[in-house]
Amino acid sequence: MTEELEAELAELQKVAEWKQQKKAKSAKYRQGLRAAVDRVVVLEELAGRGS
Image (cartoon, rainbow, N blue to C red; front, side):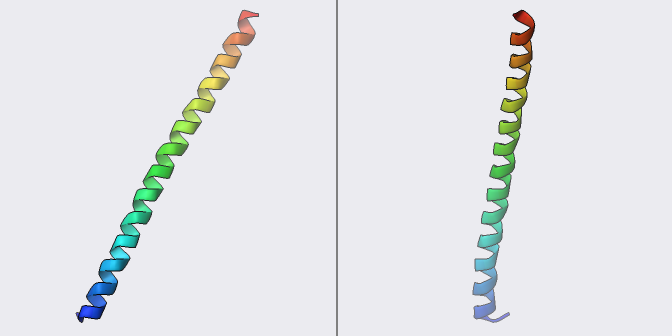
């Protein structure tokens, strides 16, 4: 493999790793957001029953 190809591969690997990390962070954020929304629904139901 030439030095140019090795440099290109290294750069592409960095980009791929960054995108994978971003994807994982986004999934974690969405999971937390869904949990918060679910909790709000539960609390609203409980508040409605108590009235």
